[in-house]
Every structure is written in structure tokens, then in C-alpha cells.
Length: 296
Length: 227
Image 1 (cartoon, helix red, strand yellow):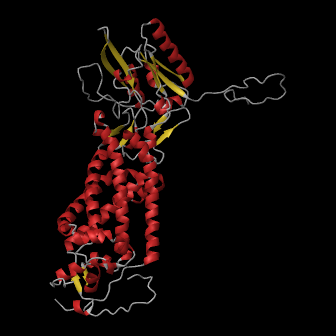
Image 2 (cartoon, helix red, strand yellow):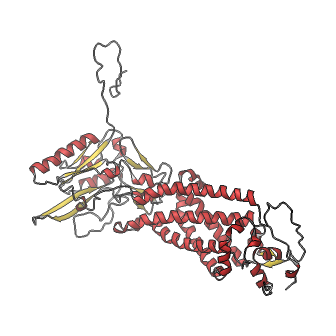
Image 3 (spheres, chains in turn green, red):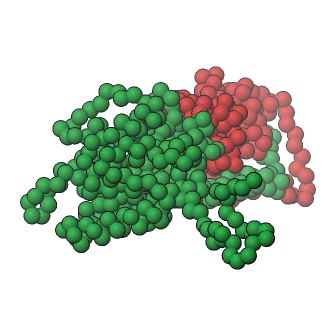
């Protein structure tokens, strides 16, 4: 029985080259957000809510088109609107779809203490397993993008799954499906990177954005959500996208040297106390000499 | 004296030597054990969050999520016990000149050569170090603990607080673990009679004379003999 989707190594009774030899499947997925063609329609926000089974709840407007100030535990996809005045006095409305970046080197996962509460898949998706989450919030500290959000009712942390449930059965994420302008793309990491670079080049060559570029930050070894920005030199303009995100130094110290120094010190302390007892033994009370023996 | 001495010293304790002297009031003892239990809870759950190799400790107290729920509350309870201990003992914990000489010669104490040390009041310098170490640590753990407790409430523009809190909480907790290990070791196995004093509230006259001579003179109403 043929398995068309499997990689072929050898076939019997065949003259010449093996069909499909050298075929190499790329597992790394990537979402490309082209901020230059986003119109801020928020179809992706609605698709995200619908697919993930959340309903819209009360919100807070801050004199802007933005649905709410930050993503929420039950609102994983938010278009951030930023008015930007350029050097020539013209105004730009920058719109960036904010969601989990699915870092190759995820700070949330590094910080998490709960067994298997955060999983990174071979395709690059970083997903929270709420059944194992203990709600400590360490992931909130570990994330350089301010993405994991705590639910006070569930006492667990939630975030974008990159539609892991859809992607694992060959579908694109819900937000991609809903985008009407085609500013959202989904594919393999190398395809998306290539498409993003092509678009950035077009922006630089033809559209008068000499600083256009691709946001795929190296500090977290790249992300599985990448952006095309008109001004890649100032990512902060796009609703506070960090210029050089990395796992916070204090989290690295805490989970690295401090942990091993602490563990060795605790073990060493226990051994040291046992050795002390074996060497000098207990302190025993002494008889009171006669001059101090009078009752008070 | 050291147990490494070759000639065994004759110990003759009289009935007088074994008479009890009150050392800790009932309230002090209850509060001590309140602090001990709440600290131990925080220690076990905290170690569970500290390293995967000790995550099983969370299972003992009902699982990770339950441990995460109660850890801050037990931290608050421990802080209450520390505050009461402060009220009970801070007066007796002031470090005096004898303590400084004692501290300079702490090696003799470690080697069980207590007779080479200056006389000690109700608490020795080591106990005072432990006391003030725990009081200071409790304040730092409480402040950093609040940040970790409500980390999602820390606004993004001051999120450096999250980074400071996580390092302070872990580092200070490690310091308290060091202090706690020494405290438990000394009071349960090293210094005979100490553990019972926190249960019954009394020590023998001989214990008081041996380990806390200034305090022995004080509570027995006798002046310290001229040197």
C-alpha cells in the first residue's frame, strides 16, 4: 500500500533515480504579518475568538481604534494601533497584530517550573498545557513580549497556540484564514522568511521606505511569527515591539548559575552538618561547679 | 571540652543541676511552632517551584496548583509569626560586646570548646545572627513575594520589578535555607536539651549554666562573680 506522504529511500525493481529522493520536508512553520498591508479590520481578532471559543467581554478604549490596551487571557490576538508622525510631517497609522511570537528560544518555557506545562513542538509552536499549569506566573516574568496572561478565575495562564489544533491537521491558523487583505501568510519558516524579505525589498526599492525590513529577532534565536515593518530600525513604534528581545538576564541567572550554586550549597550544607556531628559530636551540659551551685 | 580529648571527664550532675528553669513561655513556644510549620510549608512548596528534581514535594501538599495557591498565604502566616517573635525576643537579641568577642572566636564554638568563649546571655551570637537574618529575610521575601504573587498586576513599563523580585526571592530564600538547616541541626541533635526547651519551656540549671551563663546568673538572681 502506498504512503504518498512518506519520504522514499529505495524502491524495488526500478531503473534510474529514485523518485522523491532527497525530498526533505520542512517542519518549521511560520506566520508572516505584513504590517504594511494591514488595514486594521480586526477580522483576525474575531476569528481568534471564534475558533478558540471565547466571547467578547467588556473592554476599555483609550481614544484609539485599539480593541483593548493589551492582549488578555481570553483575547490572544490584538491589533495595536499607533499614530506616528514621520520626519517630513506626514502621519502614519501603524497597525501591528500582537500575539505570541512562538520564540525558538522561549523565555516562558525556560522560566516554567511545572512539569510539561509548556511544550515546544518540532514545528516551532510553543503551547501551554493548561492541565499541567499551576498558575505561578513565572512565564509572565520570562516572556520578553508581555504575552502570557493570567486568568484569575481559572488560576492558569493562557496565550495564543498558533492554532496548534488546526496546524497539526494541516489547516492554517484561524487568523490567517480570516485576513481579507492577505497581509497574513502562513507556511514554512524558510518560505515566509523569503516572502518577507522580498516584500521588504519591494518596500525599500519601490515604495520609499528605505528602512523597511523583517523582524525575526536573533536574541530569542528567531521567532515563528515574523513581521514586515516599514521601519525595521524602530520596532518600538509598533505598539512597543522590543528592539532586541531576549530571555531576561535575571531569569537566565536564576535558572542557570543561581540554581546550581543553590543546589550545591544546600547539598553541601547537609553533608557539612552531618560531618560536623560525626567529628565533634553533641554539645552536652556540664555539671555546675560548687561556687555556682547555691540556690537563688 | 572537645570529645576528641583522650581522658574522659567525669560528669557528676546533682539533683540541683537538673532542676528546671523556665526559658520559653507558652505563647513563645506556640508561636515558634507556628513559624516552624509555616516556614516548612513555604520551604517545601518553594523548593518544588525551584527545581524539577524537587517538584514531587508539591505532590505531598496537594499538587502544584494547590501549592501555588497556598505558598503566598503561608508566607503571610510566617511573617505574622516572625513579627510576634520580634515582639517576644528582639530585646534579648541585641548584640553586645561579649557577643562580638564570641563571634571572633566562633571557631571554638564550632569545635565544641565552649569553655574558651565569653559567657553568653539568653541567646548567643549565632542565635542573634539567625534571628536578625530571618527578620531581614522575611521582609525581603514578603516584598518580592507580593510581586511574584500578583506578577500580572505589575505594569509593563515597570516590569523590571518582576526581574528584581524573582532574583531577590530565590536568593534570600536560599540564605534562609542555610540559616534554617543550621538552626534545626543545632537545636535537635547538636545541643542536647535545646529541642525539649521549645516543647516543655524549661531547661535544666546545668544547661543554662553551661550554654547561657550570663542568663543563668540573671534568672537565678545572682550577680556575675568577679573575674
